[in-house]
Image (cartoon, rainbow, N blue to C red; front, side, top):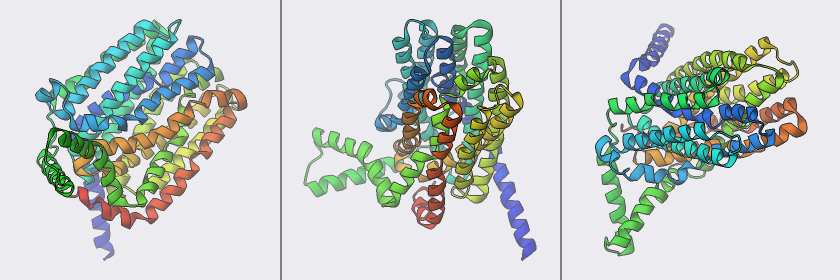
Length: 460
């Protein structure tokens, strides 16, 4: 029996590794790049530009609220999930059509940011940054649905890792690449170059096919549900009734479905999602100003925090994908939550060391390994929660809860740094990770209940 078990475990690891060789993985790698590129350009890279432009730390912190656009995308996710984008959907399909429209919006807004700049036009610059974030969040809605609909649950760990790899490559380009260009040619050239890099996503979308979104299943499910509602109400299918039913099916039913499947446990899930990334989101907006004020040069930040950090986060993401494929979506959540919170304590220590390259390297290693591992685990877990009939809307709900608390609190990060200093600020951000650690234990305890609810997705 011992030998049989060893053979079975080796087979399990081999099958887990084989998932990385599928064509879908490459597609998600490239689309992940398109999703990740805009993020830093309205987050930490933008904060470095604002710092150079003489904007105060408190004002830079308030710019973190732009990221809340990603957190409220659930508001318009039913539109992306159910309605067609004019002209593009008919030609490319619903998911690809929306992604193409969003990417074109990102390109145009990035060019606008480059031409306007924050010097003397801070309000207009902020407005254009919001447009980038809005278009990027819209792309994320369609892309998350694309990713979930193109693969079964047991492939989601590999796809999540590939998505994160592409996303992190984009962060490397938008972080280190933008800093290198800004150091040599200025911020205008940096942001124009980033707009050109979005062509990776556009070319990929033109080359791939629309996934099988199980439209027949979706349409049949909706028609059955609508007929049942009309029959109970004793109504005919007139224009007003049809419009009302569309609202119920597109907006209300996705959320009702989630709560029906999980009951009271749905509140635990949403609370866990909301606090899981609280630590890193709160400290993220102040990272580049912290490095610069500590005495590191833009080149050092690019080489260590961005380029070297990129390889560390990819290693973490790959480990996370393997952990999900081998152990499922629940068990990796706890070590991921612990690692994310603990890594912030190293930033607190770094704040007392000055521009020490060695300690910066150690800190970046720990933070990015933790971020990559935890990010893959969380994406795979969220993907497993969605129902086939409401993929985009439900995933948008989860991802909105994932970032909204952290983005809101991060808006006050500059004010907090001004009052207590960087070291204490990073300690506080680490403490914010404790609820995620405790709730991850609760999810593992309730695992049999949740796994029973996931059967709805096993038909793919």
